[in-house]
Length: 135
Image (tube, rainbow, N blue to C red; front, top):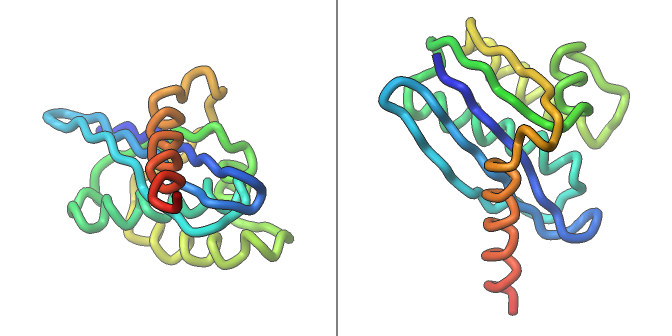
């Protein structure tokens, strides 16, 4: 089983954004920051989840049992309900739906921010790197 923790960080709303991903499993421990374009904080949460799915597909881990933890209630509820009225999220949801077909055993769970500090720190580090490049 793989446990994945994801979070996003944005300066401004919208503004420069980054995501943090932690993967934990048997003989697996990966931490990474990803640079995202100018997004709102909620869009960055969706974009980070898409990046995680892409990464798992690339690593050919999509057939494993995977639990993804996020502190974004909007992301978790949208994916679980498989529906959103918000136009900003619709393209992300469509992309996620297309990718989730490849994941027979993936579950997305909401957790409080206090339980997601590692992914939060990675997202903030990625954002700081992105901001330093601009200056």
